[in-house]
Length: 201
Ligand SMILES: [Fe+2]
Ligand SMILES: [Fe+2]
Image (cartoon, rainbow, N blue to C red):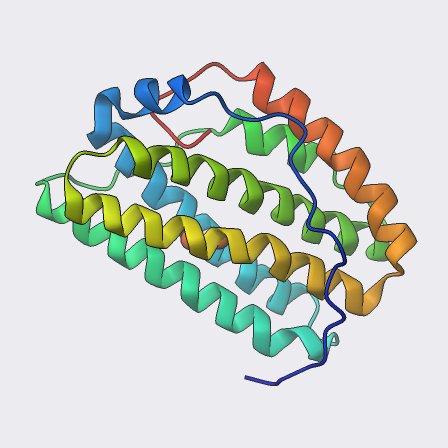
């Protein structure tokens, strides 16, 4: 991987609203349904990484890290798939994800705006994923599956910083902060507006 001297974000942002721990009780009430949705989230995250590579081939600084990101998410998908297989389950068709759809609708048109928004939307989705996977890991009783979820939660926590570091290579801190603040407000509305499911969002 290309090593770059990323200027580290001085303060790591926080989501505007915390998920209450009771959410995890509901989500895990049907763990089989939860794990199938979770697999789809990992697969889509990998596809998002590769879509940056496909859409912005001229932004050479981010190609290598994006491929790494896509591979890591694909590896997560593979690991969750093995869990699915071990439980005798089968992958199903994609379910609509109202939370993600609300955020994607905020992505602006225009090459630069679209690029920034897609990076920052990915960033807040990763942040929420990390927050919720920690809650899930804390409630899981099987020690092996619990360790697995703790590992995944840590990886997702790094991903929120990953997208910020990419954005920082192409946009000023002021532009990033302003738009991130708007998207964090929208994320709060989105996560509060969707009913609990046996799913990550
Ligand atoms: Fe992941
Ligand atoms: Fe991730």
